Length: 379
Ligand code: SF4
Image (cartoon, rainbow, N blue to C red):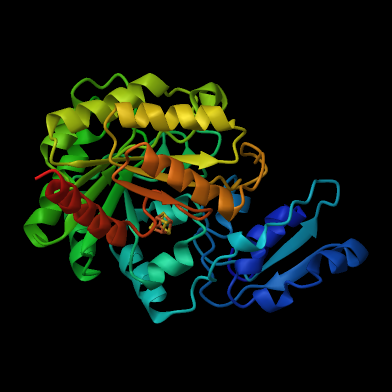
């Protein structure tokens, strides 16, 4: 691939969402679509060190074989027949790759051969988070055994389980000097324990190398893996997170293969088994949910004794993913935060760019403070 180029057809939404954020290309952004409409495909040289398989190109190149070297350029055509939906101003994010800390984080994780959900899921917050050396590690490989309609992680035949991974995860946590770490994984329906043992091994390895670091696990639903969630909870992570993602009506399209009730049961069981653990869950707006359905999900979470709810905007990773029904305005997120607080959550994070692990370190401190305050109030 060295010295060559690759061809990509985008619509203007793809363009605005992804290309606009490319380091070194952003100046070219304005007028790009108008230019294309007149002149056709354009060959754009890539900046040195451009992450070919990273979060920016991946949504476009997921069907391509993984590349072993950087292409020299991408040739971009705009498919004018597709609907354009410009991102509203409140979705704008910081461009990645502009700070030394971002590069350091990337190099360190590459060197340790670790995956992150930040890259695999094409998270819009990566520029900000990695510049603070806050990355969410994704264990058990980069290939998921499910195929959720909203998710950008690759699906297919999963990778072998790497027995050295927990050690490398613990190394990353120590070298990044993380006060709080979030560990997640792909779904591993193929494994007898769903990957629970690897979560436990990572938790123990981190504790051994960084005893002060607080640990948050964001697990799959461990459907038909009896005892798996309890195994993870018994290792006593500080936070046990499992996302409901959306309202139950949309599960057949958005979370095929998952079971809303089973996800709630997992959260209930984790809390009941280890009440000291904070439990956390999240949903996205913009998948077609109705107001009353969101209210019902919040009630269900509270009935499952969930402490912390996150509410964020769904952003369609590519044209192959579920369409986005709407952009909810920031005001609406604030209203949901108020509603959730009134329902008794100890902590609520609700904003267009909220993700499960966004600001998880700061939020953990707030969670602790909220619990202390509650204890004082009831003393
Ligand atoms: S919000 Fe979470 S997944 Fe996204 S970049 Fe930050 S740490 Fe990574």
